[in-house]
Image (cartoon, rainbow, N blue to C red; front, side, top):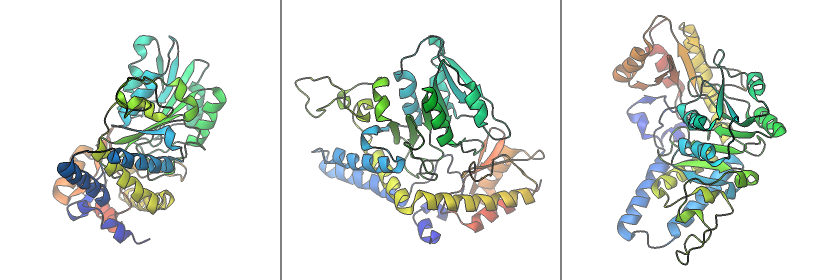
Length: 375
């Protein structure tokens, strides 16, 4: 693969050695162009017909392809938090029900569930152990009152990649809804919602998809859509949405029932361009490149005396490398790298976190290693 040609689509490379794609990624050239094209079109012609929404339907098809879903199982959301909140607020709960998750989740996958506690719903958190979430501990936490098991496909602060297939099989066998926050893996590691028996999935595009903020995907398996009540309802939630009168209140027979009103079209068009880029490049090829770069990073960090938090078994490794030092102020290191070397990484949960993408080079990986103080 000619990775240098891929690199040409990322203007950020002219300014930074950027390795924080688990935070906010730079826009891919195509995404930026799609947003500009939309702005030019509506500046000159306004939105005079439904063609823009027809274009969004084509993007829905591509998004479904990325997930191995059907198009009627996918819709657009502002962000991951909105998708997870739709699940938390749309299911019917009884006092004494519980939800199983982990103590390593990003707040987007904690707060919507915590908000249910005033309804008598309990949140059970399985503890991270040495950067991992033990599968057997998640399984042990499920009982007869568990309604949902919700987890990140990749943990944001450790890079641990969960075995979604095993979890999905288990949840299906127990009649438990399986909900996935996929933002840290979508586009760079395979997500097959059918093979993984995922019921609900949410992810937005501003990380590994290299799309804009404020535009994401929400998947609801067709067979469970009847169990998830729409909680924000508007003109776009119903069949014949373009027939404004007479009123006819009947939900879409698809995930579009979770829409409410007008779409964030510039964001969706940017997201669509990013999805096209990922599908053309190939998720398997992307994941192989990421593992190559992060393996090189791990080897260099260990040689310099840093302790690696991120699991590196092939089934658990991701594009995130979290590492620590007992001798240095980690936030000071992060700030020094950015201001003095123009190398961008993050500090999360008392760990440094590097998350390169496929357009980063081996030279940039080595620059990061060389710029870090010795342990």
